[in-house]
Each structure stands twice: as C-alpha cells, then as structure tokens.
Length: 168
Image 1: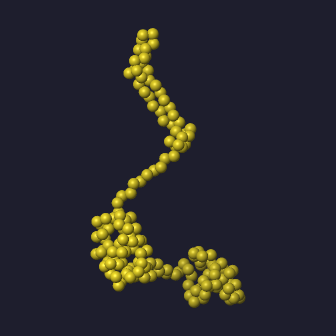
Image 2: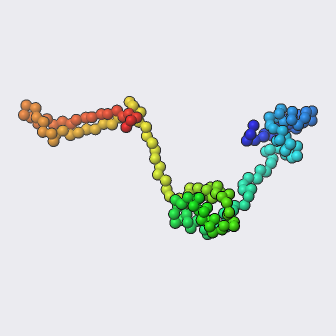
C-alpha cells in the first residue's frame, strides 16, 4: 500500500521467504511491493534502525533575498499577494528568476510569515440554537401604562417567553 511504513516484522518475513521464494513472491507475502523489495535487497537494515533524513532536498532559492527584499514589503503591507512579490523579485533579478518556478516556495514562505507575524484574525464561535432547548425571556414593567381596575392603579409586570429556532 502506498505511504505505509514497512515494519520490522514485514522485513523479517520477507528475508525468511526470500531464501525459498523469488523476490516478487516474498514481497507479496510480506505485504509490500517488488520495488520496495529491491530497496531492501540492497540495504537490509531494519526500518526501526534506519536514520531517515527529512528536510529540504534543494537549497532555498529565496534564502538570500528574503530578508533584504521581501520582508520590508511584507512589513509595510502584510496583505500583498505572493504573486505580486514574485513579479517584484523577477523585476529585480530577471536572470535568476526567469519563470514562475519559485512561486509555490514563495507562497509557503509568505503563509508561514503571516501565521507568525501577520495581523490578528477574528475568532468566531458559531452558535446554533436548538428548538425546545433554549429560550429568551423578558419582563416589562407596565406601571407606566396607567392601567386602572375599578379606579385603582394596576401595578404589574408583563412576562414574555420565546423559544429559539434555527431561523433566529
């Protein structure tokens, strides 16, 4: 299966089966591809003992111009688009950036910069009312209405209750 790490147990099974079966059969029985089996035939180190180097495979093309050319622009206006920055550095360095190959790298760098240094984002917690679960109520003092009963003023309050609905 693609993107599934090979376990030590799978490799041991492959190496045991390899003594009596062909590469394709042993790999199938261990649960990985023939291409992976060829890699293990060259280096039979267990996966748990391998030092996997992760990181950049190519040097950063924006490393020496990021601080002096791009950051001042982002500091002045943090809403500038990466494509605008790309066109700017292409005008400054036409021989170094003749095409748009660094566009994706620039987009990643700008997105990372904005996450750390950009403007604060509004945080909104949406609330969805459930009918019968929540309601709104209100009291109104009706003394100012001057209602009388048999000539005596009626001092009272009105109570109003509304059940919320999803349409609110």
